[in-house]
Length: 240
Image (cartoon, rainbow, N blue to C red; front, side, top):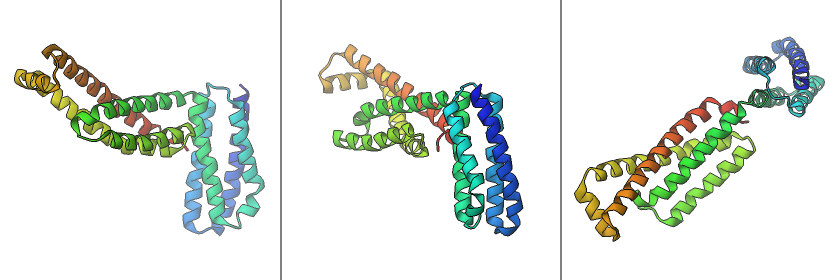
């Protein structure tokens, strides 16, 4: 694989950068030297993981990372005059290298599927919400705004997408739990079913069907929201 060759070259470049940093550490305040040491070590570790587990021959990405690393080595003397700028450069390089691990191994598909599960759970919750939280269609529309921001951020591989998703997850779970509680309680109470059917002006069997659909939808939404949240949390470094 050409990508592996580039990654091996990247590893050598990072080790060269690490060597330069170690020589420069005595001149830096402790907070910078400790932070930089951990950061560059992480970059090297993830590059080794990408090399050993590489499944996708993404030459373009490997070449872009190599270019960034070489630029950091080339401009090291200039960057070393401004420790905050040096730290920021190394941090950005490491973030990109760590995130690329999911691309080279193909594990980014796990993250994409998890995000699609989150979207599905949220949409189901939005459909169910007006029935149990007494919220207006306007408020439902308002909740769509952060969803669109999350989608845009996720497409750009930004952590903001996952952060917004995690912030909206409690809403999804609240709606699902309320819907499950209502549907289970109502299914085992003929009087409640009859009352609900009468208030909606539908036949009893249609009311049973509606309650069962709410039960199934809420169950699916709750499972999807929990599993997607866990997966996104475990793979948060796939985003930059």
